[in-house]
Image (tube, rainbow, N blue to C red; front, side):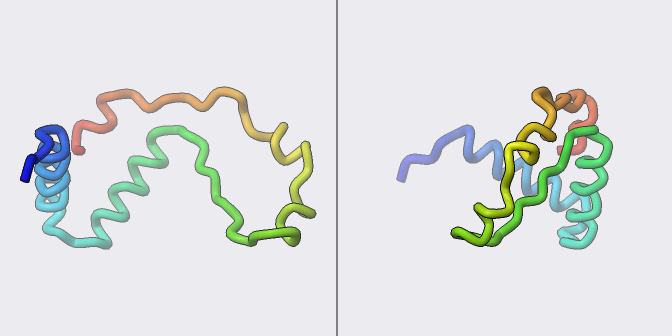
Length: 81
């Protein structure tokens, strides 16, 4: 079976990252949350309500409140990945 070298590289980096935190899921989540905070990006939490019930709650003001430009994180912040 053909293996994509890019996919293999991503998997290897994922493995190294997890190993650096002793494959501890709580440590991985905490580290990713810390990176998320340091990035300065806006975190959008989605409402999982579906159908008409959700559509009644959405207004144009909800969309206007979202900034048009989201700042990007600096590359050095992702050295650990």
